[in-house]
Length: 512
View 1 (tube, one colour):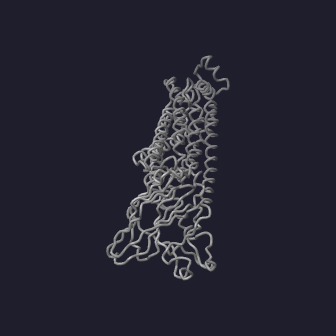
View 2: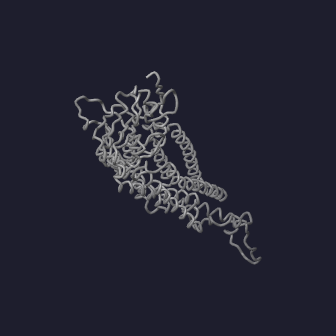
View 3: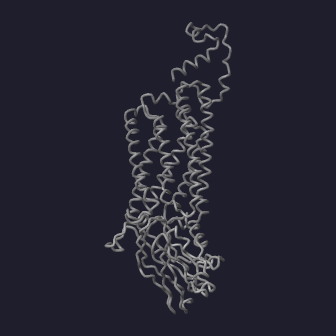
């Protein structure tokens, strides 16, 4: 053993973990349907899954099948074509290890190039058997990593892996790989399934907290809905078109949170992601996000408050909203329906990039419109509307600043956790965005809650038309004929000699 320097840290296994660490299976029942082996260094591998699993308390009287946390191999079969069945083979291994023990897989002689499969040179040193997986016992987790396998006999088309259950007694991120070292078995495929279970159910460890989170978010939306709908019922005669749109967003949010909760609850109970519920949750969420962005954009333009319509911008706003909905729907379906590990990082980037670009366009258009709206409100001295728009602008600015800060943290989190060792905190990333959007919705509800004064903020025909160019206010009326007689009341209303400006102020005061 002194001639064999088994250096800590396997480069190849580390690379495998890195390649798969960002792609978690979205089901705790991992099905393998004719999965082909891929060449990585001197080993051929199939990634069987990666999940965070919380440990179960050890119980000597507890059978393996009833353990709280486990990974169970069921009906794992290796198949090869008939034309490649005229020889017996070495073992095809199932390798199970916790991410902290990745350095126990593979090794090198005298500090040379690392290998997962035992090479002829290493076999001559007597430290391993050629064609076998190099591994050594973990110093942190007794009995790990687990390596076992099956082999083909002459003319055999199938090699069956004996069913077994591995109890999990240490919390960690566990990985399953199927490996072999024989180039003659490159046409072999894997079939069967593995079942992964946590103490609280079949939800992967990183997703388990989200079930409670969506339960609390459902309750939060119910409370917000009670407040909003009670105000809506009391002052339904004073309701604005904008407030109807806010009602739609709250309703969509209620359905979205409830569907996500039931999605995770069903997943936790059965171990299989319920496709139907997931699709509905994704769709309600995409519609809610689209409508919310459109409402914010229309409010920023002054729709329903200082202008009656969007005019020629309606088609552009709807086009942007429809494009965002399609991009968001596709991204969420890719990330939540089926198995995420089927998609590479480039594929997720491909689907996520359009959503990011459209979001940036929304932000730019919103703040550009808000700036114009604030300037015109201030010029026309519509003080009540100006005040509510200033508060709305401040809320949006804080939201954008916090969002940018969280994006930076998210990038830092993912870049410094390449092996997902901080998986127990990963659920906070998606949860934060839900909390932030809910907080902004609460602010909007507080600013535009139905009340007896709602019509005070509505567009009025008596006020100056908002969408006219401000230069129109500089055009003076035609000179009155010299014989025109004005009443004393007219004279009082025009002490400055120009009745247009002061009359406009009086009308504006009434609308305020």
